[in-house]
Image (cartoon, rainbow, N blue to C red; front, side):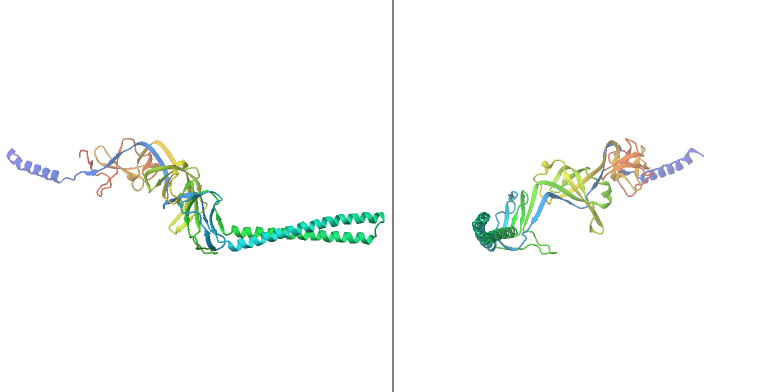
Length: 379
């Protein structure tokens, strides 16, 4: 074929190549992460928000109902152990106590008089017995003196019993008075008071919950209670380290450790079955000033490895697969063996090497064999 005839075929080929070049598939833009070494922890987190709890907290009410007559504290006050926090009106009991005290004093006076007479009668009986032995008086006189001494001794014993009964009655009134008083069982802070001077305070009837008269907390000792998913319960044990964070204190994390795992499951809903875990602060002094009831997130560290091969957990695909960007930009699918993992990092036991680049983006057209380029790299 002559050169002149080859020209049209060459032009057609060049045109076809140009069309293909202009319409060729463009490499997908992807983001990548270079496989490297670092720390990986296996952790679990609470399924619902936990709370800051006080080591000691009690909701106090009087045992009997009555009108509030004395209320020396207000909400937020710090109180000492044994301090009176509330007292109901006690006028009737105070009057009864005064009467009983007078009765006790009279009974003691009668006892003293009766026992003195009994002592003298006993002495007289002994004297008459001595006289009878010497023949100075008749036996009937001795018998009369002995009978009088026995009667006087019985009267002394009866008077002593009256004293004891009056004392027991006084103790009973004191107990009744204690039922109208609320005393702080420990030093702490008054969190809540339900009632004002002159109002009627009523304890909760059986089976009916009513607000306590006084809510007292010891905020010098705080811990965290967090609900964990029941499936994680077998892996949680006392002593495991934990990280504690608060919505109210963004960016700040407190170190802690598991103190107790509840021996039962709580079912708030059928789909939300959790186990309560108590976590102590590693440095209790750092927790001072935190408010009881603060919303808390807890991350319990089950295991940890330093300087291990790792990748972002978000790069893992179903079936423990990752997509590696080869040197020519082509996507390669790889199955890996994972070790420890959390929401951020996963340990690589096998399947990847340090320095390889895995694809972390999830474009719709991305698949093994597709050509890619990075946003800041060449095609």
